[in-house]
Every structure is written in structure tokens, then in C-alpha cells.
Image (cartoon, rainbow, N blue to C red; front, top):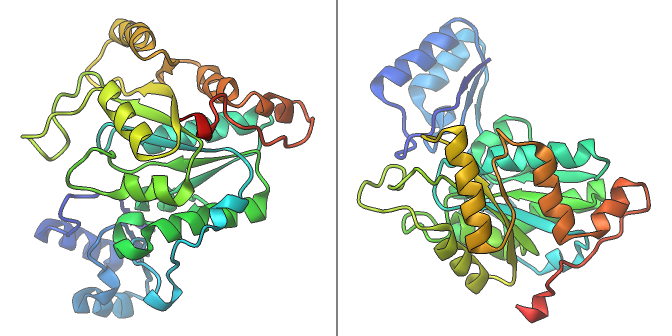
Length: 298
């Protein structure tokens, strides 16, 4: 199997990349692609598929419009906590943090399920999710809602973790808005890269501070940011420690680095906001608790 996991801003193959994929097909490899360009619709790739008896899976291909789902409010029946991992920019580690958090919760006896919202999470094997940026906008909130509802009905988890996309304040991408509307998380963990000054692929756009993004998130949705996770690109370990201390003092919420600090710190962010989950870890039943701050107090 050949997985084309690169995600250029254009979503299209370069001439060189087309040659690489065709060469892989020539070696008898099935193709998994996460591009906006659907290889299964390209006459050249269709011919190569038939010639070499291989398959093509376009992960970003949305369902037929007749099968797409409008938001209908059924998210209200999902009674376990829902936590979205959002960020201050694209490609900043939201999926990695969501994956590590989900794994760490499960290792501690808290039944957690992750909802993927991008092609890479689906390629990596997420059981529930959608490639959100490939959906017509009218259906985006409904498709996210549907993924969460399906996960809750099938797994009866103690908590659901929703992978974020882009950033709510990013002017080029709207995915975070649909995630907040569709999943209606009671809490958010925000991912930030302190050493990154400019947004990915947008040299004229500065990365906002966590405080600015938190204010935007909590104004846009009935939720609260319960923790900050650090992307340590361009930072030393000492830099990370200093950033954690600074942001905890500035924002009044816990901060950690999901990759270089103990995952216990990630789990503690969640159990501090949802104390009932500690009981679930000890086998005391699901206990779907309200967050420390009720939505009505927001």
C-alpha cells in the first residue's frame, strides 16, 4: 500500500508527485490519498488502476449529497463530556494531542473515543469521523454531529475527544466553527506553538496569542478552555518549561507539552474539569458530569 499523506495547500498533486504515485501503482501497490484531487476520477490513474489491478481510496471524497447529514440537534442526546482540541494555527499538533489524550485516558480506565475531522486521522485508523474540509458547508456541522452521535451510540464512552482543524480565528479556513457548532463541546483544550510567529502558508498573517484565541472561542461557543498544550517547535526544554509557567500564570489554566511532559498532566486537565471521570476510571460507572463552570454561567 502506498499512502500519499502530504497535504499541500492546493490539495493537488505536482507533476513529480503524479509520477511517484504512478510508479507505486506500477509496483502493484494500492493507493490511499488524502488530497482534494480525487485520483479515482483521473483517467490516467483509472487506466493505471486497471492495468496493475490495484485499488485507489480517496479519503477526502465526501458521501453523495443525498447521504450527507444536516445538523438536527441530536447532539443533545450525547450525555458524556465532549472535549475539542483546537489550536491557534494549522499544522500545530491538534491531532497528535487528541490522539495522545485519548490513549492516555483509556490507559487509565476512562473510556475515551476520538472523533477525527481530517484526512490524516482517518488514514491513521480513527473509527469515527469525517474529512470536514471536503464537505459542502451546509452539511459540515451535521456531519460532525453525526460522527459524535454514532460514536456515543456504539461505544457508550465516558468522554469524547474531537480533533480540531485550523483555528477559529484563521481567516482562510472555517472548520473550527463547524466543529464547535456540530459537536457542541463542553470544554476545549487549546494547542499553541509559542515560537511560531506567522501562520502556516500565510506569511502576512501573525499567529494570535492564546489569550486572543481563547476569548474568541469562549465568545463564539458555550464552552470553556480548560487547558493549553504546547507545540515545542523551535524551543529548548527550558523554553517549554518557561512557557508553561508563563501561560499558567497569564491564563489561569493548566499547561503542558503532550510530547515531552508526562501524559498524566493531560489526563489531569480533563479530570480537573470533569471530576466525575475519576470515578469512571475506578469502575464506579460512567457518571457523565457537568464541567466545573456550567454553560449557563458562561
